[in-house]
Image (cartoon, rainbow over all chains, first blue to last red):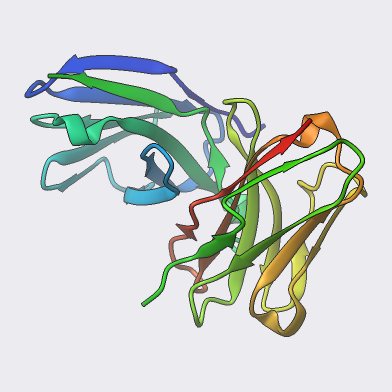
Length: 114
Length: 112
């Protein structure tokens, strides 16, 4: 079945690195995404990775994909207070690749302490 | 380029009333999706339009929910009659074929 799991809460100090983890069950995932939701705002696409990649870096963001373990992580370097938000992991499976239907996790609330 | 716009941003209605949510996708995006997040849980897919056609409505909870996209532009999601468990945040997203989905700010629906 299709299931995406995330831990619910992460607290870090400003300047530290944050690592948000996600596991999924469907081995046919084609694309995996990270979305960010700031308070009162919509979902902002942060980054995505294709399933044949194992790493993608974009400025302070590093996405790691372990396809064998079905584990995805988002590392934020030099975390700032403005990074405080809910981070959602999402996948598109092979069965949904034609439609673009996203399967989301529950979201991880990142709290950044000054 | 304007993003995905949803209206209203908040709605508080009584059980049994009707509410209509609206979504204006990014211009030129044929794909339009509705999702819902209930009580801090995961965001769940409701349905998918390609232009004016419903491609997948497997996530619609029941027949109290009706989505339309007349003319293939904006979409509406009507809940009639609303129940307490319909409370949540309703997100709309749009995309080009094969492209990433861009989301609106959501409509927070509270049924009391």
